[in-house]
Amino acid sequence: MMIEILEAVEFLKANDNYLILMHGNPDGDTLGCGFALCGALQRMGKNAKAECPDHIPAKFDYLREGIRQQEFEYQNIICVDIADSKLLGDMKGLGDKAELCIDHHISNLNYAKRTLLRAEYAANAELVYEVIKALGVKIDREIANCLYTGMSTDTGCFKFSNTSPQTHRYAAELMELGAEYSKINYLHFDLKTKGRLALEQHIYKGMKFFEDGKIALIRITLDDMSRLVNVDSDDVSSMASIPRQIEGVEIGISFKEKKGGVFKASLRSSEKINVAEIAQEFGGGGHDRAAGCSFECGYEEAEKQLIEACSAALKKAGLE
Image (tube, rainbow, N blue to C red; front, side, top):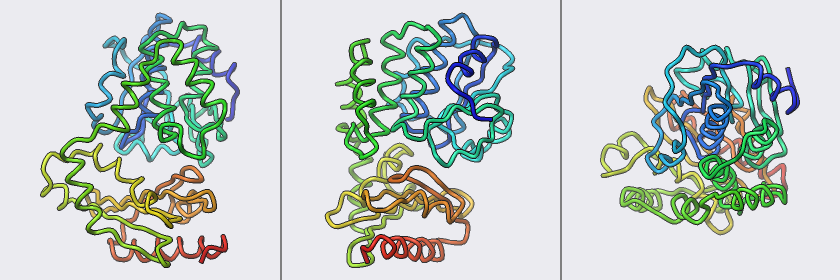
């Protein structure tokens, strides 16, 4: 059922022994929310731990500062920034038992017993910030860093069209509370590993265009990952925005091969195209300008189906 902030706060105050889940292929928003909420609950004297089904890139290690390692049997599961429990991969069964979900995706399936949703928020960290303040927890530097990371990364360092005046206000408040904004933004938007540079070179060589350059597509295979040196999953995730950066491109597509013959597609778009609607055609979802879906039909067929859907979206928007 859908609930409001005060109901979420009442639940968090009344219970204990929390397991906080963050989605697979983690980004700064889910990780920032998970560790911020974990730290806040621990500061309230609660038992809390945050877990993710996939490896967390080293550049996010600072989010764990101020988090104590606690051993306990969890009783209540919380999901943050997770619209669908299947995004938890092997931990999906735990997500299906969630007592509370705090999310900002309009595609949320309302799978948890309680869902606190703000689909109009640019980052889920904005909502978690409101929850933590309502809990009465003092936001220190460590929590501020977590929340600022969520807001900054989910808005492209406040460049994406989802960025709102509220996002800027909340970020400014977190800066005043000690968030190390300069270090965080450099780490996530300027710093590049040698592996990422090699991957970018490979991607640009293989980029494909459709519909007179209005659709750009890149593909990263498991073979690419094995041949390129020092490339990790975080380097691959950061590639999703590249196709949309090309002049004239309305829809950018990034295909990443996963084990078992699955291809995950990440879509980015201009303000004229809602890629969440496209992703939903294939069982996925997300936001208007950033969404994703998966295919198990083989790459050639996956590309064909997705390009057809994107072409139809361009035509619908009068951009063909």
